[in-house]
Amino acid sequence: MALTGPGGSVMTREEVDRALARLGAEHEAVQTSLLALQDHPGCRLLDGAELTGRTQERWSAAEPGLGRLWSMFDTYTEALAAARAVRSRRNRPNQAELQELTELLRGSGVTVSAGRASNGGLSLTGGARLSEQVSLTELVERMNDWYGRIIEVASAADAVWSALPARIDLLLTELGRVQALARSVGVHPGEHPTGDALEEMGQELASLRAEVVADPLAFWTPRPSGSDTNGGRDPIAGSVDTGRYDRSARALDDLRQELQDVLRLRDDADERLEGVSDLLARADATLAEARRARGEVLAKIAATEVPAVPGPASALRERLAQADQWRRHGQWHRLGPLLDTLEGAAQRELLRARESLTSVTAPLALRAELRGRLDAYKAMGARLGVAEDPELIEHYDQARRMLWSAPCDLRAAEHAVRRYQQALRPTQAQAQQTQAQAQQAQQAQQAQGEQERQHGPADGRPYGV
Image (cartoon, rainbow, N blue to C red):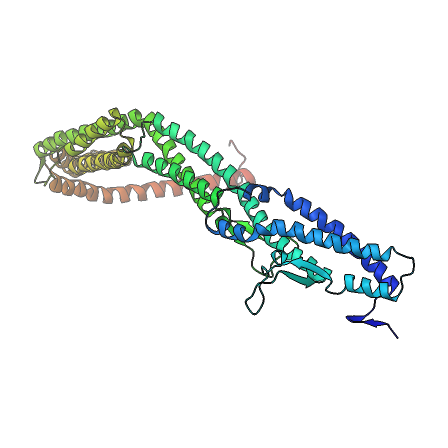
């Protein structure tokens, strides 16, 4: 039957020794953790920093725990030392000493002041308590509670300060290089949208850095409860919110790309303007050729509706002059879109001029086609040996007079060429029939000669007789 005391069963000597060994190891672990916490970079940075917002609120609640932890640790050390002193009196402690050790090790024999309590020494009745009796286990739990609060705030702040300010500084340095590039191409705030955007980005990054330094926990996203993969032992249970930084970095990349486009525009502006001017000159030359061809068509082709030739693109010339003026004054944000528009419009103007020339010269092209067809039909008649046929000669002469006279009636000339072709068809068919008969006779003669070479002459006489 186990001995009992006022607080329950009395510990045996073996239980006391095991408890003292466990508490001794626990004492060393707590001391190591407190020393590490004291040197934690987050605590050192938070201590004395000008904090605002959420960080100020949480650190104000957690910072007093630093002093309380050391006070509770001193109490813990004293209680452990008292228990060791009782145990060291004799090798085999008596019943009274075992009861005292049980009270020290298991009971609420540790006295802590109200300032060391986690609730500030308040009682349920609302009055303040000067001291409180707790056990060593409860004391360790309270130390763990304060340690968890402090290390959570310190680790989160250290994670944010380690991640963002240095990256923001690098981005500010890159922003300075982009601003220098902007000045090199004449892009200044108040004169160019990109210059205004770069200035606003500088202000945004400076504000972001100040907010990160003053309130790092505003950029900390705690990990949801139950998602800690380290079994709850990881004090940094969350991630740094880099959304504003990432947006600024992407915006700076876009602005850098835009400035590189401006730089390319500056280097290529002269060549592109010359290209637009060359397209317009070719369009004007094509329209001039169309007007000349229209006069020729009206003089040489009868009963034909010839479309009017449009005038030159004077509006494009004015816009081209405006673009050249913007180039001289370095107004690249205006020149870029205008050059894109002018290049497309100049291409369309050249295409319009070529279409006008094609439509105007269509009657001349048709006359040339009819002349070629007539000559081809005449050459066909010569190959068939009917070029001297009187009827064909008459049809040919009639078509030729129409095609080589001015003004030329294209409809009548086309009809005359068709008559010549129709008159040539019977002769062509007859010649083809004669040619086929000749080919058949030749093939029969070749077959007979082959037979004689193989079997001898049909009358039995030797060759040569």
